Structures are given as C-alpha cells and as structure tokens.
Amino acid sequence: MSADTGTMALADGTVLGMSPLVPSDRAAVDALHRRCTPATLERRYFMPLVRLSGAMFRRLADPAYGRSVAVRDGEHIVALAHLMVTPEDRDVGDISVLIEDAWQGRGLGSALTRIVVEQAAALGFAGLHADMRADNERMRAIMRSLDGADGRAGDAELSLNWWTW
Picture 1 (cartoon, rainbow, N blue to C red):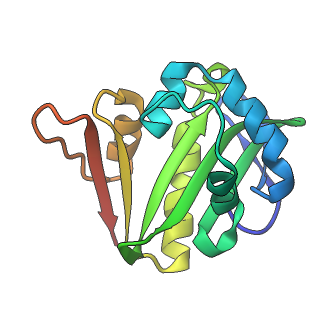
Picture 2 (picture 1 turned 45 degrees about the vertical axis):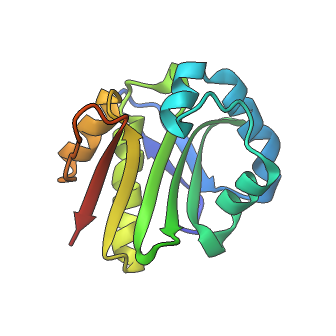
C-alpha cells in the first residue's frame, strides 16, 4: 500500500498487480462492484451498494483521507483495501477490504489485511478499527489471526476490532 506499484503472490502461485487507487480507476472500480454479488457488497458496505457515489470514490482515491490499494488481474481490479483516517480519532485507522467473489477463499483477504496492518504501523497509527457484520466469519477469522480483538455484543449486526502496538 505504498506509493510504489508492486505485485503479490497468492499461495497457489497466482501473481497479481498492486497499485494505489487513483481517480482514473473509477471505471474499473465500478466494474468490480458489478461483478460482486449483493451478499459480498452487503458484507463490505452493510447494504447492497452496486456503485460508489462520486464523493465516496473521490475520498477513497484521495491520499489526504488515507491509503487505498487496488489489486489487479491484468486490467481488472479484483480487490480493494482501504486504510482510512478515522474522523473521530486521527490516530486510529479504519480498515476495509472488498474482494470479488471469484477471488475469495484464495488468501487474498489475509494478504491484503496484513499489508494494511503493516502500512498502519509504518504510518504511525496508534491502532486500527474495522466494522463488519457479525456473521462475516471469514473476515473475523482474518482479524483474529492478526491479533485483532474480536468483539460482539449480543445479537449486534456489527463486530468491532481494535489493534494497538
């Protein structure tokens, strides 16, 4: 998630490109959202959002609000990861990940989340925060594997995770 373009290798040997999200990625991000199922989009946005608003996309692509990385298979963006400044506490980063359905279950979510955690530490964040649906077992397992505190209040829809180092 640095300013440099790079690659990541999945456990099965697939090599994907990584680069910062930039304004010219708008069409590719829209295409990613069209390829995702409503369930995947709801796990990421808590509603079946099929297209980001212009303001939402600009915020994700603007380094002043944090860092976003696009993961590419050729010309297609297949995943996005975001490390955003939390307005309530500028020392805490908010993380989120969206992975196209066809790419889920291949280690991409774990790899992207590790990159976000490493980037947050390098940028001097005191901790990380992530909201997710309580039934998002894959993401909750990833967070636990990275020493994130897994919290759930009763039948709450969202699970809250924090890291400090």
